[in-house]
Amino acid sequence: MKTLRQEVNLGFTDRKHPTGTHMCLIFQDETERRQIMSKFVAKGLADGERVAYFADVMTKEEVIDWLREADIDVPEEMAQSNLVVQDTFTAYCPEGRFVTGEMLDRLKAYFSESIAAGYSLARVSGEMSWALKGIPGSERVMEYEAWVNVVFKTHPITAICQYDANKFSGSLIMDALMVHPMMIVRGQIVHNPYYRSPEAFLAEFNSRS
Image (cartoon, rainbow, N blue to C red):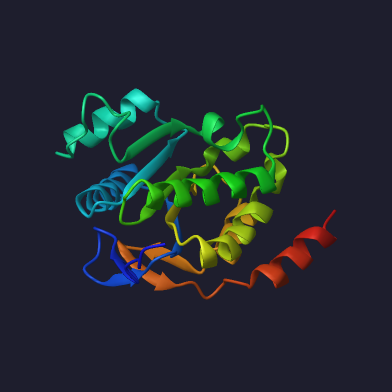
């Protein structure tokens, strides 16, 4: 495998961060969310990375329109481009239910296929409100988020998971904080003081059931 850059520019902050950074954006303001996400997507595309966006609140068509309105060059024919836009059901639950191991395997494949196709790196962002829709297996989403930190050590995707504080309960927001090493605060990346190692979080998570 070719040598990969060790740090990336996220677009919404001048400071570079290690590849494989797993961040959460917990937001209440939609305008702020779109500003951060459009810059994250645009910078990845400009730097030759493969970028995936998993949309739940917006449709695929609305995401593409939003990116174009933000002056991001989205080609008419996306099949050969480095931008992948999917609805969250297709991305996370293609068989009609959410399975942690299968989604982790899809992330690994996404990274490996991106590098093999000649992209410099890979980044991804998902609107996590899909997990509130009662999809079978979605109660395991925080287990999945904890395991992502393990997967990203060998498959360093740079990721932002978007959590709407107006929709998620306080307990789920706290869980989201516990499984993301980094968090976005006022457009800056900061170390998350609530973060727990995957082993510690999973031990507690599994004891709940």
